[in-house]
Image (tube, rainbow, N blue to C red):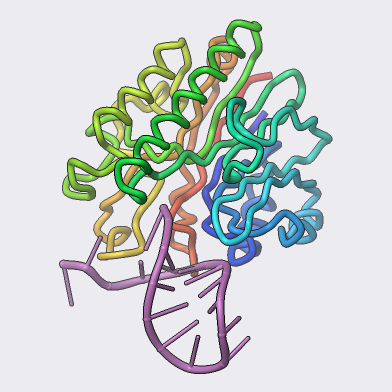
Length: 256
DNA sequence: ATGTCTGTTGCAAACAGA
């Protein structure tokens, strides 16, 4: 089973790139974040042509997540448990083949001052509680998407962010470790512990050309799923395409 | 060198968010 996650920074602008990626990589599931459109505006037809159906949690202008799949999936959540009904469109969870797959777009935490950062930490705590609940129920799961956290100093280029940025603040990293300490496996680091690997390069200041990137897109695996981990690849080539997203896909392969 | 990009408002070009 192959599962890819990609913050596309507008599904409509990137529909062509996404369709090309599906054609080339043929993932079983593609988790999209920042689709930046309402559900009915999502360009589903472009992906149906490649044999994929879509489950979409959209929102006007900002945020928004979607799951593209080749087979039928069952939607288990359309927002993170514990969130209000009118919460921003940042989470969708589906079940496919006995596996729960959570697709998340974690708040950036740099806007809105202290309240904005507190909201990020609150969201991370809700995610931790949800993961703990799934473990209690002995479920097999993946929680993947844009975490907006660089877990360690090895996960960003020197000088790419100031020390007080919400993506690297100690509280953000502690909240990420709290997920790991539940017993989850960071798929990319499990197989590539010492490589310099980034998944995001800012559009500004020649970040891509200078390789001033961040690793903020992650796939966390529950214990039995981690035992099935085969390969993980960062599709860096997507960042070199015309009009790319500022993020690139991460592709996780599991043994059956 | 904070040097870019997307979507919104409102119908040009400024603003927010990332």
